[in-house]
Amino acid sequence: MAGQSVIPLFLLALPLTLAACANREPVALSTQYEPPTAYTKPVAKGGEPICRVQLGMVVDKRSDSESMGSIGGRAIRAVDSAAWVRSGLESLGRDGRIVLVEAGEASDLELKAELLKGYVMSMAAAKTADVVLQVHISRRGGPATDQVYRGTDEAPNWIAGDEETQGALNRALAQALAQVRTELLAHCGAGKEG
Amino acid sequence: MPFRATHIVILLCGLLCACGTVPPYAAFSPAARGKVSTTEVVMPIRQAEIYVYVPPAQGGAGFGLIGALIDVSIDSVRAGKAETAVKPLRDAVVDYNFDDVFKGEITHSLSAVPWMGAGTFRVIKEVTPDTMEKALTNSQAGAVLFIAADYNLSNDGDELTVKLYASLFPNNDDLRALKPVKKDSKGAVALPANALYRNVLTYKTRIPPAPNGRDGTIAAWSANNGAATRAALGMAAAKLARLLAEDIQRTEEDGAAAAKAGTAIEIEGLSGQSIGSDSDGTIVRFADGTLAYVTPSMLAP
Image 1 (cartoon, rainbow over the protein chains, first blue to last red):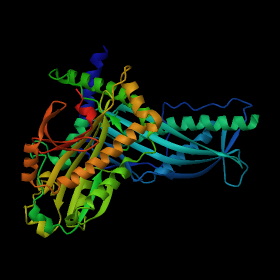
Image 2: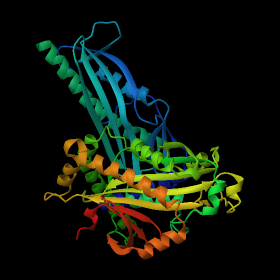
Image 3: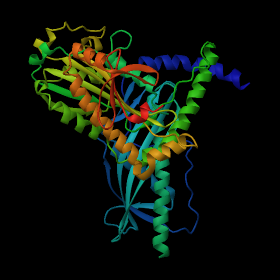
Image 4: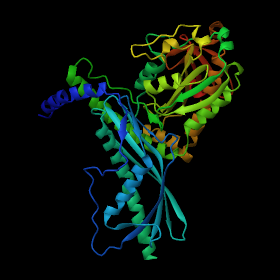
């Protein structure tokens, strides 16, 4: 049964693939991070301490800040990758346990981030998206910790489309952000216990 | 999923070499040297990190759509495993910038070739026919040398390969007069057939495969912050840059004579002639004029 359903799906995808082949315009990425649909929003339990985080500088450290790789022969371009990462980091505030505060407000932690890698590679029927962040977390007046977080998304390359590409990068960033969230909460927990 | 070397070859050849229609090697005529004046060196390096080459599945060939689907599925699974396997190495060398190392070595080597007048060196990350065309037509230099680079580990993880695809295009009237410039149907001129010099240069080295397979071998490449990988990529950049500087000054006759005087050698089933060596490895010239620099590990039985 599974084999029977695959063929019509493939035939359905074929015109889309051919259409995509004809499209050689660069993929233009959004500056806004959108959590993947499969992403499960962390739920804060009542009574948990709130981690107040001040979001500092977000810098794109890549040599070419516009290029985000290519998919199916189409170049992928970002207008502002740092803004995209920043919007991802801002989404940490949806957690419930993390509250982003403005500069000057009382905070538990300060977070700065650098985008070290951000790209999509594709060949034939497959694609991968990688996002690597270097994150500096510091407690007010305390030492900073530096950690590198990588998110990777692997999936078939369906039609080398804009949404497909954006989705792959968002999923990769979501993976990296999940690690950042864990680190922030660990830092906050350690600070409040101490 | 990683790039696959065969696809990269096809892409880069499409951009620079036109496999099948244009021979990979064309010597630069000494008579043209005086007409170069200045050269802009453009290094298209599409990848951001090392990858594992996964040979495309072919078991489904001859079975139509079903076979193609099977191959796609196999490719997808293999590529996914390769991506997982290479992650520790990527993390170990995340601060290593191959682009900068390569650019530094190319700058050093080609600046020592006086007639090239190489003054501008730049890496481009967006590698498409359009960007290559723009790089050529927007250049103010008398000639534009493209040096596309690609680096990867073999599917088993034991072999590291760095490959350069070099093509020198005329960009002033004196050079264009030497060879009429052809345009394709879209009016593009950055075509392999228009290159006054072109060649493919390869660096290969190998470490012993680990008993526990690819993951273990990649762990060896990753150990000590990827020390072995950093060393191999650094050596590859240095050796290939020097090889390129020598090759672009070599006439076709000199190249053939060197090969004739060399000793027969076989690299992974390809027969060539050893045309030189140093303390780190051996230079091999193949029958089609392409070159390789291989470390002793590649020659071991």
